[in-house]
Image (cartoon, rainbow, N blue to C red; front, side, top):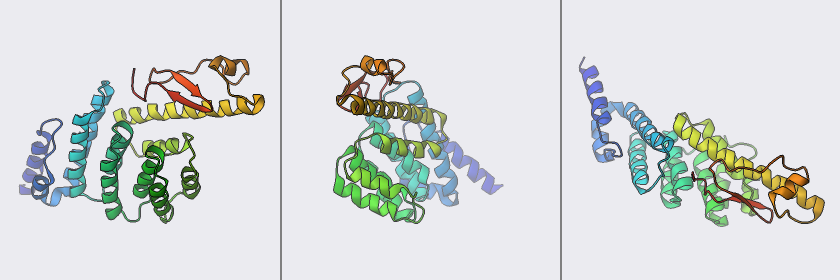
Length: 261
């Protein structure tokens, strides 16, 4: 009975904390006692639900969300340092939505320390270095570490080589998003990543079509109508975020910045 009271009281206390606020690790650790795994799971569920609801209502992720996510995930992973999903969740938000690669790297290095056998933490650092920051030296280093892990996918070394060689296609981003979607359960956050994946897949498809046009005509198309005339597209492509898809040489970009317009 005493255990049941302690267990229930702790959950009520954590559930009653204000939205956007997480108790610091110095308070969480002594309060959690032997329930560290339970409390870390509860706080993570609350965090992804809170942010997921914000995203589902079209709220733009900003500094307020950044502070909340970082504080929550630091606390969660202090309670359970091997809990991978909070690291991944925070890094996707920090890297893709907030461009805070420094904090993302700090969290991933913490994950590397406590999940030494896992290829994903060094892969995510390497991906950020190469894809977002254009740092080939950093990227190659961490991609190499990821590729050497026993459980790393067989195609990871080749992807690392492509990124290090300056591959500017959207395929590496598509791979990372698909990997993250497979491991995400929160419906709101899942929808957020699926639409981002849909946009990257569309732009990757369009670049493949442009490449075919270029091979056939020895020049790049000037408009989407040129592609339709050649039979390479059935209609004008539409950005899932409501922006305008534009061509620059062989590349495709969106004016939306992967945000709703």
